[in-house]
Structures are given as structure tokens and as C-alpha cells.
Length: 59
Image (cartoon, rainbow, N blue to C red; front, side, top):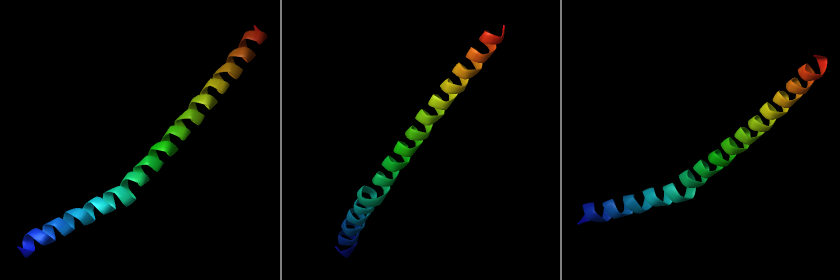
């Protein structure tokens, strides 16, 4: 009977850690990665536009 009680307590503790620490951490990491990707795409497009406009005007 004590093994079942310890199993239930362990499962509750694992769910507490999962929902309190791990899932918010993963959500924050996903938001940061998305922000970095958006900034990278904006920089890529800006460099592409600047290099395209400079080479076309010099020809």
C-alpha cells in the first residue's frame, strides 16, 4: 500500500514540475527562437534589397 501512495505522490510531483517549470521554460525558448528568426528574416530581406538596389543603379 505504501508503494502505491509513493507512486501517486511521485506522479503528482512530476506533474507539478512539468507544468510549473518545464512547459513555461519551453514556451519562453520557443518565443525567443521565433523572435530571432523574425529578426534574421528582416535583416536578410534588408540586405537583399540594399544589395539589389546598389548593383542595379551602377549598371
